[in-house]
Amino acid sequence: MKFNTKLLHGRAVKKYADGATLPQISQVSAFQYDSASEQEDVFRHKAAGFAYSRVANPTVAAFEQRINEIEGGNAAIACSSGMSAITLSLLSMLCAGDEIIAGAGLYGGTIDLLEDLTKFDIKTRYVTHMTPEEIEPQINERTRVIYGEVISNPSLEIMDIRAVADLAHAHSLPLIVDSTTATPYLANPISMGADMVVHSTTKYINGSGNSIGGVIIDSARFKWDFDRFRALDGYRKFGNLAYTIRLRTDIWENMGGCMAPFNAFLNVTGLETLGLRMERICSNAAKLAENLNRLPDIRVNHPSLPGSPGYELAKRDLAGRGGGILTFRVGSKERAYAVIDALKYAVRATSLGDTRTLVIHPLSTLYIRSTDEQRAAAGVYDDLIRVSVGIEDPEDLTEDFINAVNSTRA
Image (cartoon, rainbow, N blue to C red; front, side):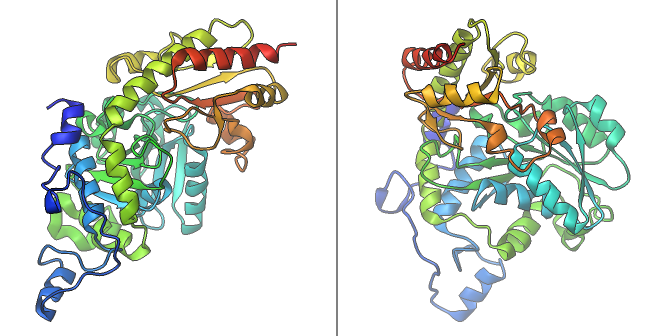
């Protein structure tokens, strides 16, 4: 099956209760059993079933199974937010004294998280570009994981997943990638060598801006050295499944970062139209970028444009599609604000991946707590505008943005 067909008719699409075409919403906290021994087996994970919705829920499980199939993973764990997914994906394999190597162009919230982890003696070494040439010199005896974004936000550099995965595996390290901005429609990181994939499902997977969520997909292909990865030492008997088992039955369950059943239902309904939305969003973004790029006094970045840092890899790994985000610089913070305020259709909002076009000034919002060095490394400048393109008619979007830019020209 191709992408859109699999979304609707894949193996993970069940015959739901009462003939429903979507999973029912199990909006309950607990589940009853006919006997105490049956309940014990479920709590001991010796029998399939649901004990408590923080631990497992039928609606959440239905979403996990469907996103796992689309990503080609072994198991998926749905979380309360994208940041919860990132946090738990790392803490499931790390102990005090361990180190992460990550791209400096990460989303501002992720950078804040990695700074928080230093208080637990987990250090991050940053590289300006997620390339083997920059990553390898940073690897040392404490390095435990390499982490990066498939399409960095907002610098829009694209990771060469195959090359970075090959390097990571040569040093017996796992590679975690955040594929929120790429989505399974543009890239399947596991098929390119990534070991785990995380998403903020709040964005493109949900698609309508109506719920918060995250998900971790584990390939279960990485061969763990349990003497080295001390956090997984108690899970040796599970072999390649150790990460999933620890994540599911230990740190995810105990920290309580579970997805709510209703949010899981909204994510299932959003997932079914992901391919259609992304096709339109990517097309709109490329057209808007091309038209804005003709204006004389702004600098536009989108991976569909020759000269973009992600252009060549987008052609090779993303089927030529540049994704749904573009940025442009207008010369000053004051003009950036003026352009944003002059837009009629774009919504001034912090998220991305919505059906409607969203616009934001990253420096004064997402990176407001970052240092000047962190902002520069992430490609965030005082005159930068980030646009998350929606599904509106491209002619209307182009006219709106060109008028806004032209209205602020001195």
